[in-house]
Structure formats: structure tokens, C-alpha cells
Picture 1 (tube, rainbow, N blue to C red):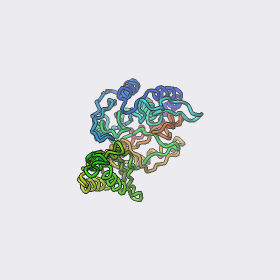
Picture 2 (picture 1 turned 90 degrees about the horizontal axis):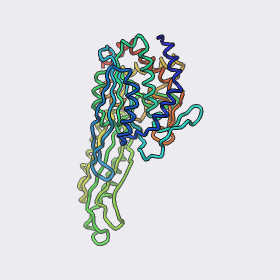
Picture 3 (picture 1 turned 120 degrees about the horizontal axis):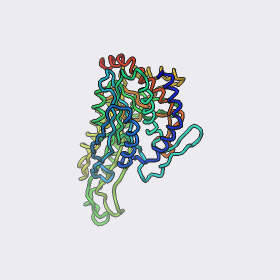
Picture 4 (picture 1 turned 60 degrees about the vertical axis):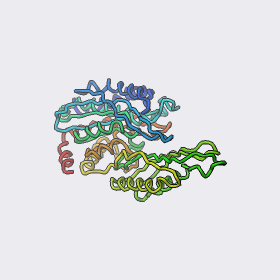
Length: 409
């Protein structure tokens, strides 16, 4: 089939795609809803499996986190879907999406609805069930082209991206090291802007443990955990340096009980974002120093858990070429494409850290993700699929150029 005929086929899929997206968005797949995530995974597996040579269902690793109560809890995630086509081809492309959303089963935002002539609202319509349908449609179209034989691909749909991909990080890294380009289907902004460089991110928990006592009768015997935690939080927050791209968001605080009890436990949770690996290394040391300095003060212990899970996405020469191709191909479709640095993170950070050049906002255009106002632009389902088709075609024809740059470092 000709390129024009295939792109016309994509254009004709608008209504079926909207109908399918509406059905998928009505299935809750909040990260902690493992059954819901696996149900969505099975729905997508039925769509991708006819295209691929092999399919695997991979277990996600479990991960431990400190809770806001100061206790270590084990998190379990849904299964990872993997689909492979032509693993023997000289050029290999890794396409990545995530099955989970940020909306738990008991969240009030559960049902998609058409908002107006341009927008579909709903949980995950943009982030990123709509994006996975863009990926699927582009691959369905690409497989109808004769040059598809020149390119192999692997699709990975993980189940825990919204909580940092701790359970799928090893699978993604291994896949990235076997590929030459990465296409990730996070949503673009409503005006179609793509993400360029991304900040790195880490989530951390400070736990202060003192000694409870009656605040009236034995006040001096108590050791106030909240007071030490407040000093630690002040020190951590002071690491913010907006001019250097470093931000510390103190997100949650917990501690204490009755007014007449000296609090023996206090917990603070925070997120740090920064622009470079060097900053990440320095910040890790500064956090260690803060804890070492304050631990044991006034008879209160202080400990830190957590880590940087998203390294900064720093652009390589190969990544810049992939961006240039995307802009050029967008123009050929009368799409004005621009890139902008962002503080947001995604699996593109981890893939870039593994050496894989990638474009990570190839999904639908939309806005207000992670809120009950999330929406996507309905026309972007087919427009973005056409763009991905042309990008796959360029990689099949000229992927050796990208490979040369990647190997050069």
C-alpha cells in the first residue's frame, strides 16, 4: 500500500479510535489498582498481538517506600506487556507507554465525556491511553508499507510509570540498550508543543523519632520529633535554587497526636527536581549532610529514605537529530512542532540515561493531566498517528544515520 493510502486509512480511524478510547478510559487503572491495570493490559494485548512476532507478559518488581506514617511498605504493580517485531532487523525502535493512571478506584473522576467539538475529557484520555492508541495506529499503518521490513520494533507498556517506574526500570533499561531510537507516547501540550530536555526527580522521606511524654507532668522527659523535623525540613527547602533549576517541594507532613502528648514521631515527604546529573549528585550529598548534622539532636533520631528515580534527560547529538526529523516531518503534515524544556519527568528520562535517544511526547495533545479536568484534543489521535508513521518510515529509511551518531556518543 502507498504512503498516501496508509495515511488516508489513519484519517478514517478517528471515530473508531474515539469510541475505543472512551471505553478504555472508563476502566480504572490507577497504579495501585493492580487488577484494573492488568485488565487494561489485556485489552491492549488483544490489539497489539496480531501485529507482533512474539508477546511476553513480564512481572513488575516490587518496591519499598516509606509511608507518611514512617513505616516501610511494599508496593506491588501490574504486569508489563511486551510485543516484539523483527528482532533481527538492523534498526531497532523501542516504543513505550504506560497502562496506569494517577486516579485510584475511589477517585470521583472515573468517566470520560465529550466536552465540546474538539475535546474529550476523562481519566487517562491524554495520559496516556490516548497515546497508546496513537502508537498502535501508527504501527498498524507502518506494517502496511513495504519498507517496514527494514525496521524491527518492541513495544513495552509498563504498569507503574505514574509512581516512578520502580517496578519496570530494569526491563526498560535492558530494552533501551538493545534499541537505536525510542518513541514514547506521553501527551504533548494542548498547543502541540513537545518536551525537550527534562529535569531529573527524586522522592524522599524524612523520619524523626523522639520520645513521648505527658506535656504537662513530664514535659522535660519528652523528645519532640516535630521540632527536629521542622529544622530538617527548613534545611531541605533551602536547597531550592530556581535560577539553577533546582526545586524542593515539601509535599506532606505528619506527626503528633493529642495536644497534651509530646510527639515521638514526625514524617516529612518531599520531591527534588534538578537539571543535571552533577546537581543530582551534589544534592544527594547535601541531603546526607543535613541528616548527619541533625541526627541525635535533642535526643531525636533522624533518618532519610528515598532516592532519585528519574535522572535528568540531557540531549545527545542523536537526540537532536531525532528532534530535527520530528519537526521536519511535522511540517510536511502542516503541523507546527516546537520543543520546550520541562520540569516534568517520564520514562524518557530513564531511556536517555541508558543511552537511547528518544522523543517522549508523541501521544495526543491535551492538558490538565493528573487532575479531574484532564482532556485531549480529539483530532490529535489521527494527526499524531500520521506523524509517528512518518517517523517510523524515516527510521526505516535513514536509521543508520541516527545509529552512527548514537555510537559516536
